[in-house]
Image 1 (spheres, helix red, strand yellow):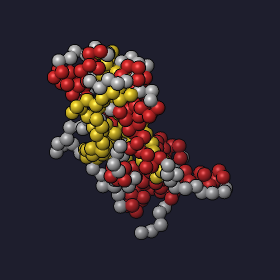
Image 2 (image 1 turned 90 degrees about the vertical axis):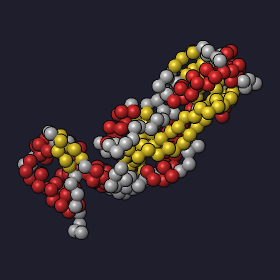
Image 3 (image 1 turned 30 degrees about the horizontal axis):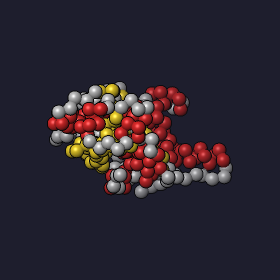
Image 4 (image 1 turned 135 degrees about the vertical axis):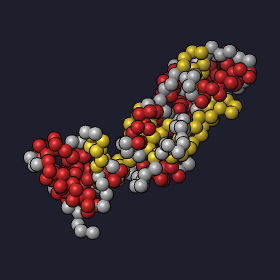
Length: 292
């Protein structure tokens, strides 16, 4: 293969970030046809189409997304060279991770920990709704989405669903409230509870357990944000129905206590990816690592 033409790559890079051929041509002060020709030459050399048109939109293909990642690294290194005249810097690999806005931060950090100390890796993390994360995967804006429910999967959907961890769910509270008490029925009768929302699998399991025990708990709060459940438990609003990983720091310091596990209730964590011809090589070690 002939040496990569960096002029062609820079034209592609400019269009990819602008998202519009006409505006990019005007900004670079060249004709639109000339700009289009430069990109076509790059596509010929790489052997892959880099853009596809959907109506008036110019969208990156999977090969285009990978090329843009490398172009970002190449031109960032060039800018650093010009700025410092001392070193070119180290090329950094990029992993784009999306997570449910309500997902445990402790779990997210645990999943990403193998990469966080690496100087050659940049983790770009974002949060959003379940639907937004799936759209991000489909548009190749994300390499992986971290969720606590598996998306619907059939022949028409491209998701690859990796179950990466399963945590038991417990009753957790302040020492003053739960120390020495281990009876689930007694705790639920004597104390208000902080619950996950009705739509969650944890809540369905809890409601079934309460029904079997013949208990009607007093609900202090229903919260879909694990960080908020953690704060309410710390403020002693009630006992929380929560996976211990959510309150890991508080359990280690003794600010909260795990009173008892709830039988047969678990929180399952999934990493959702999409079938890709060029999967991000940073992802496989994370998917293969056992999660605590």
